Length: 67
Image 1: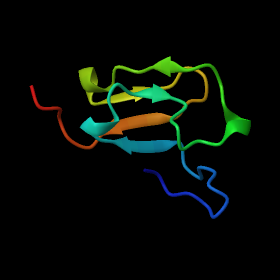
Image 2 (image 1 turned 135 degrees about the horizontal axis):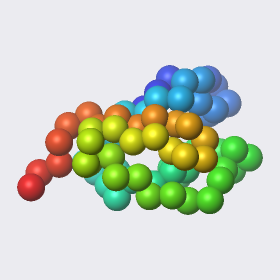
Image 3 (image 1 turned 45 degrees about the vertical axis):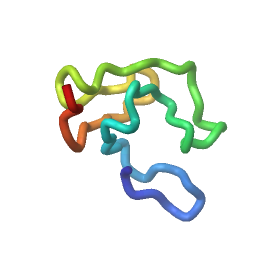
Image 4 (image 1 turned 90 degrees about the horizontal axis):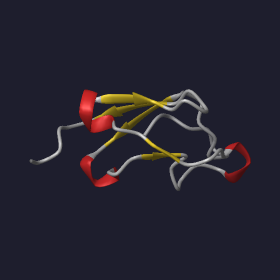
């Protein structure tokens, strides 16, 4: 996951995700409620990265999923 400050807020708009995070959606459960938006599922496994259309968070795949 991207670096975060002690309050748990993201200080970067970049999050690395693994196969265990699939299916990927934003916001993720670890994100704070105040900066929430409607849940959107992101096809990160298709291109290795995906950008949330609501908040602009970039998700990058750490490794390819097992097929």
